[in-house]
Image 1 (tube, rainbow, N blue to C red):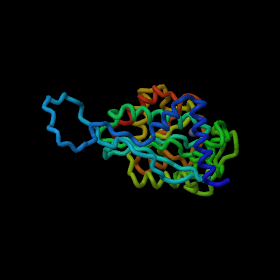
Image 2 (cartoon, rainbow, N blue to C red; image 1 turned 120 degrees about the vertical axis):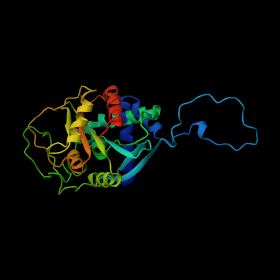
Image 3 (cartoon, protein in one colour; image 1 turned 180 degrees about the horizontal axis):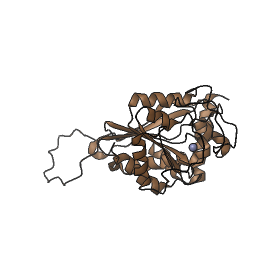
Image 4 (cartoon, rainbow, N blue to C red; image 1 turned 45 degrees about the vertical axis):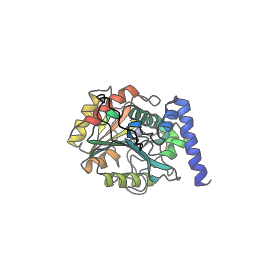
Length: 298
Ligand SMILES: [Zn+2]
């Protein structure tokens, strides 16, 4: 199968996912189209005298363009695009990553698009000091493959949350861990193109805080082993406005090669956040989480 056809099928898969889960994804696709500038930003040369009426007070305009993207930061094993969207202009950069576990956690991908729609409707939510980046689907091959357990790994059968160069192991004791299908940590730390692309992107942008969305139901995991203090503070701030548990449920699983741990190793406040179920997006809850994340101070 050619890469072009695979990409087409990936988009078709995303589209169908949106149809199955509601119309949010469809509106997301529309929202991702080039942003139309408000009339206030359009300067039309004119020889007419300026109007004399007193201008009515209005809120301070938001700089344009408020958002941009998608920016291609790499491709998956099967050649699907890894895309990032940006909202706001501030010097402090924050990142939301969804879909690291592909179609098995497809509801996190749908949530990412719903949150981006929300930001397009409410640009005032992004503080001036913040730039928020969103990577809605880190594992598009798994998303295209299945919305069940077979959708968890990437195209090489690798768990993308076990492939990061932080306490990496190719394999691990399965007691207490997800163990429904064979899955590996990869042939080496950072062996997978999805991980390599996101690692390079993060290092180039110097993010100060990251949320990585998962499902379901175990709670909020702060990055770092032991957890970075700022990861714990971020986890507590999110727990205060949500039903997500902190500390999270301890299943006894040994976590290796995790994304949030790698980020914390670099001083980035990072949390894994698990939605309540494998099918809902908990949108209202995560609108509150988003506001906390945007306004959180280190
Ligand atoms: Zn997960």
